[in-house]
Amino acid sequence: MWNTLRQPWDLMRLARLLMGGYALYEAIKTQEVFLGLLAGILLIQALFNIGCGAQGCGIPTSTKKSSSKNIEEPEYEEVHSKP
Image (cartoon, rainbow, N blue to C red; front, top):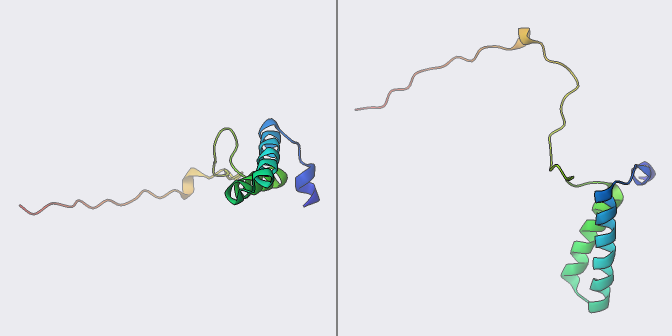
């Protein structure tokens, strides 16, 4: 957990922390439960550095390079409709 907190803080992570902190302050001041839940989500995303970044969510790419020898050509079958 401490390693996650020590990771470099970029602009989006700081923005989530500030927005979550302000939303939590307003939720406590106005006694709004839903705003408090949203503030909690933003604060968790900021503290643990989870969530999508500015470029959106992506699938991690594999570091292994696949060889073209292992790729098999798919077999196709023609399907005709009934007249």
